[in-house]
Amino acid sequence: MIATATAALFVIGAAGCSTDSGETRQPSSTVATATTHAPTAAPPVPQGSDGVDIERIEYLDPADADPAENWANLYLPAGDHEDGSVPLVTIVHGGGWESRAGAEQFDEMARDLASRGLAVYNIEYRRVGTGGGWPTTFHDVARALDYVPTVAESHPQLSIDDELVIGHSAGAQLAVWGGTRHRLEDDEVGSRPAFVPSRVVSISGPLDMRYAVNHGNGRVIKQILGGTPEQVPDRYESVDPIQNLDPQLPVILFHGLADDDVNPDNSRRYTAAVHASGGTADLHLFDGETHTSLVHRQSPAYQQIIDRLTDVATKELDKLRNE
Image (cartoon, rainbow, N blue to C red; front, top):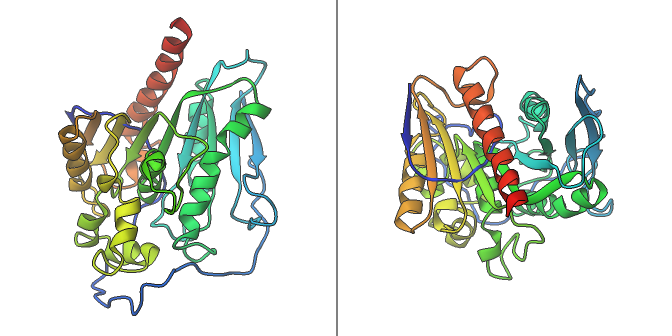
């Protein structure tokens, strides 16, 4: 059974935000939390499948990049296509902003969307444990999004006039933040974007980060931002989705009511805030679905989400063609 509240925005991520395990120790300082590690090679490009081709994209200059982390896989419907005829969707995976989860988690979803005629840009970025943290993780995601126009230039079949960004869990926070970067001050991380998505989708996202700190996600949020809301308030104000609303950005939210990792009230609170600002948010709550079940094929809700994403992406492209 699905409970639905009206609103709109799109983001998709992967594995969940870690919950706290009784740990109450506060960070000893508020310095940047970026970590270093010995660079390794990126994983191989996944094999293509029937009707789907896959290419590797490197979105950072070699001098700035970690070759193991700063890349994306581009999933393309096979065959020849007219210029501007294939809608592009970007996926930002989750995993608590930590190294334990990577872009490979969304290989199945990327293939399923590509098999329906969409192109998918599935990005990898540095996380805590793989050279990321504050502010590196946010710089990486911003640069990956800003590379979308370059991807479209080299793949003229792509349409980015109404591009969706999808995120799950921590990736949802990054995706929704990515949709509002044009509202940042010039000195903030990710400001002055070269590309701004027109729609965002959040799946199981901690979109009220101050609330999430005290409701199950304190350890990972304090780790990625380098402190509590009281210790580093400027960082929360800059990247917390609920503090950076854009009424012009449609948002779609999916959340399982059995989610024990990220409280569904995150999505409820964000939806209410969007509505109060005069914007649109489309919230879908799924009975019995957990934090990660929504992004796995075995879940009944998964197919509904794929159908909705496909429908929105193709309808908006048709609307643009008819204008």
